[in-house]
Length: 122
Image (cartoon, rainbow, N blue to C red; front, top):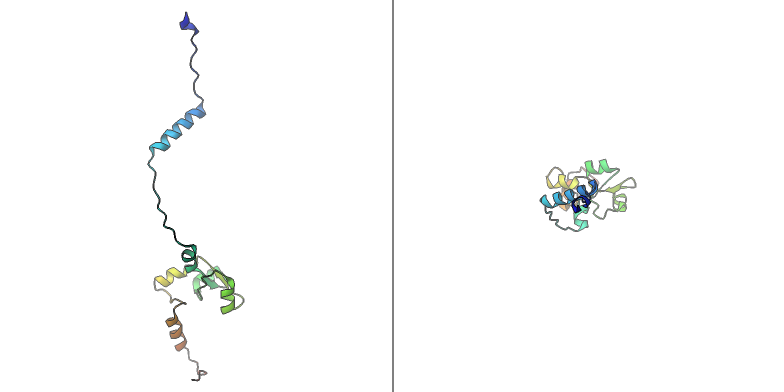
């Protein structure tokens, strides 16, 4: 009669079933490999710092590049109402040739030579 005295094995809890099935599934799914190329934070973000009265103005006018990210670079050169903003999109516009690079000395010379200023004396 030992047959009648045997106990049934305990059934696993639903949480244990969920844990086991999740573990098995995650091991079956292929994983993507992501390769990250490290760049210095200065070169990554500072190329798109530009001065403006607000973020929209900085992205529209791209008046002055302020790679340090410091507002004093803008207010000192353009006036008290100007600050330095990032993610302006100016670098993309410059690289695409849509606007001239304000850091390019040749552009500044050409812009000054187009001004009709009779007060310049050599």
